Image 1: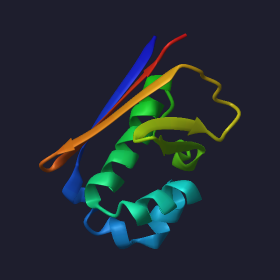
Image 2: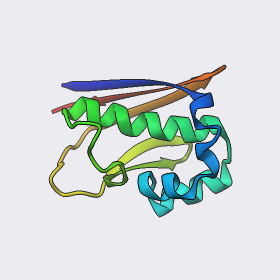
Image 3: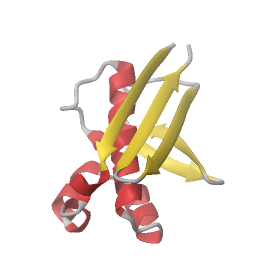
Length: 111
């Protein structure tokens, strides 16, 4: 089992939520569409924290391309879709939460 967690101050994304260069660099088209439907700083921070938590769980540095880790939502439940073939994992559990000025994401990978 591997696990990763990331905690982010939501207000860090105040200026970034309108920065198209930042958004295009770090989020896939599916994620950007989700952000359009659920537009909030909390959602943006939660998606970003999820990507960082996953990379921590698999031991990849934060210099890794965040767009290769796609966060999807199916029936209200977040999940991870891996777009780069050098990372192959199954049984990935993702939880995202936010409260006040913080967003947190936790990833557990079972082998």
